[in-house]
Amino acid sequence: MNFQQLRSIREASRCGFNLTEVANVLFTSQPGVSRQIRELEEELGVDIFERNGKRLTGLTEPGKGILHIIERLLLEAENLRQAGNEYADQNKGTLTVATTHTQARYVLPKVVQQFRLAFPDVRIALQQSSPEHIAEWVLSGKADIGIATEGLSRFKDLVSFPCYEWHHVAVVPEGHPLLQKDGLTLADLAAFPLITYDVGFTGRGHIDDAFRAAGLATDIVLTAMDSDVIQQYVTLGLGLGLVASMAVEYQRSPVLRTIAVSHLFASNTTRLAVRRGTYLRGYTYDFIRQFAPALTTGEIRQALSTPE
Image (cartoon, rainbow, N blue to C red; front, side, top):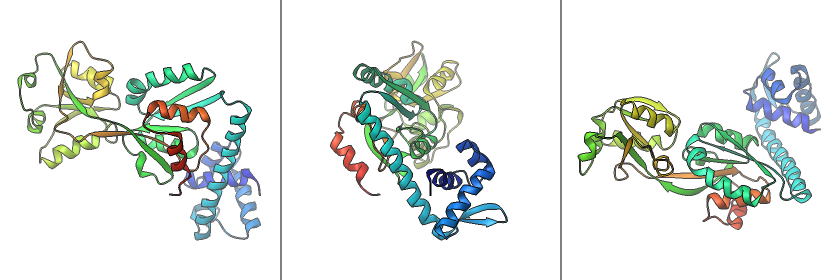
């Protein structure tokens, strides 16, 4: 039994049982992957995968239990490597943070700046994507930390921590009729074309829920992943924008006005996630505490060690 066999089993499951894709992930050949899988099955005396001819089609019942053990073994192997790095040089390494554009653009710059002052020899890699991809990267070990507003709490193998709450705001061009209106309602917003986030990004679910609960149809003429793009199209007069409050708190547009709508939409909670059971370098705890000062190292460690 060796780690290449274990990785072949794990990646076969992750890649939808496509051995060509597994070979690309592991930088080897498809026959090599097949051989690794077959040799481990022979050693264990059990079929891990269901097959249709030579093609893998799924996991057998024993295979499901074996995969869970393999995941734990590979995680502990990575933990061992991280522990070695920690004791060899506590203040050197690379911290990979997967996050959305909104967090990377408006919230993380100050945190990263403070972190770099404290750990000048630690390199930071920011990866930006959707919440689902962020979760996948943390689960696979491609990222140490995931930060997003939506989605992270749905994965049982992630430990996610609430970090801070925020609201949406409306952004409109100077002279917009809603700037003169008191007691703004959802119906007032729905009367205009809307520009906001893609589904699954930056609290979009709370926007949809509010209009749906009020029985109001909306004309969402354009969606985007990041706040800068939304505000640019609002500037062009395409519609009323609904964006995250930090997008206007950290960088105000000289040609747009902001309208508070926190009474119309539920608040949003940004969460930080790490993989359950993973070993975190000392500087990773410092980064988490800078992003979420209410968390303590003890609380983080306890949560990581608690079974799902």
